[in-house]
Length: 324
Image (tube, rainbow, N blue to C red; front, side, top):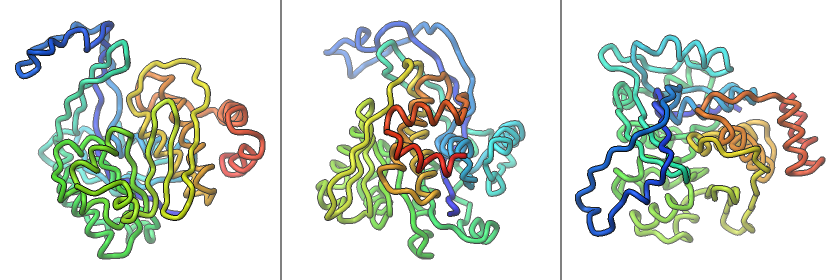
């Protein structure tokens, strides 16, 4: 199964604030916020939702195709992704702009405040999926992740026009999108990904109810934080999968991307929705235990031991056949 992942490619600048953001906010002054946080450290990491998802899929051996735009400073990042099983042959390189930057501060409660500079990402709208499909011999699924908004719309329209199954995953871009754009992006999707907050925002912006949205997509996949994930499909009982036990919470950045990587890998293996979601939750657990979105190491024996403990021997045997 050939899966292409469209989305941002970026460098993450991650900082930690030892206090709580909530303690710094004055209720009657929220209309004129001016705050500066003295942080403990700075980590510069590889990131971007498209690259993060592809890295995780590469770790699981499913050979994802990364589709996005980067700057001339991408050479080292490309080599890193290539070494970890990602097909970077469809990444567009800008001649004038740097690779995008994400700057994020996380507080003691794991709340986050972030800013994103688009840079070369704005050129993703110039990428034709048909050229990608021709290069790799066809596409079975395209995940349309957070990217240049025009690119997201263009990729969605092209998938619909060429009858390519697609997954809608707006994440950070929901805030700047109109209800009309969101309706266009999700209508006809095989999978719709969001977290609980984004789920409510999608319904508010589109004016569609949960039932109406579910009728317009094949599957609605909602991540529930520490409670796992819920997958809904019209006419079926929801599939709910919990998270494995964590060794500790280090940094939540990239956890959602890791879940998607595991889930999409499960689809590529041909396992069922429940098993794919379990793989996603296991991979997400590795990320939350690590600082950085692509700094974790997937040691297969350890992965399977923890997977077995969380989901049982029958589930583990099915996954082991693909992971090994």
